[in-house]
Image 1: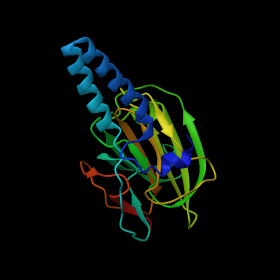
Image 2 (image 1 turned 135 degrees about the vertical axis):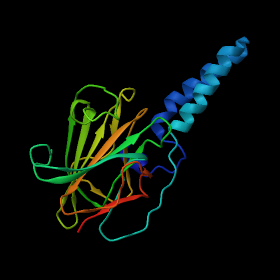
Image 3 (image 1 turned 90 degrees about the vertical axis):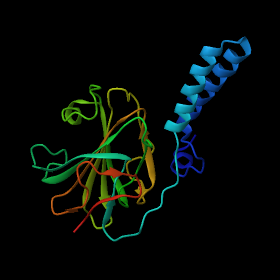
Length: 220
């Protein structure tokens, strides 16, 4: 299945979930046919959860100039000034970290329109994604985006304790739109956004956010 189909998904579910859903339905039918009530109930509950996990609702955002949207559903873990030494971009930035639990929508979306300049996958550990050290030590996928006015933003998909699969549907050189789907991470994780140091941040620690809708800051 090509990336355009996933990015422009018109179904209420992310297509990556279909294999898990079909397996769950199949097992439930088999167990029901055999009269194994407890196993039928267990697989039914698991299948319902998997359907819920892979939901992919449509999202619409206000078209505000220079607005940066959260790339993930979840809760703001941290808003932090980051110096050159601790910054993958090699310059001072503001880092916004978002934690996704297993009940959040896990489809990730582009924070602001531009061009994908670089994508770099880094293998690593699978520590709990809400820990600070997960940012540095866990498996991650780094996406560098150049805005239409030539500013760079870095988005990092970070695997977690349960999340063992990072999915990215975009490639280097792609032109992307604000709010466009670009990937997902299975079963709870973390995303980080590195914005220019002079950005005006509106996100607050503890705030609940929705990918493709909630503004986390503005480029100035």
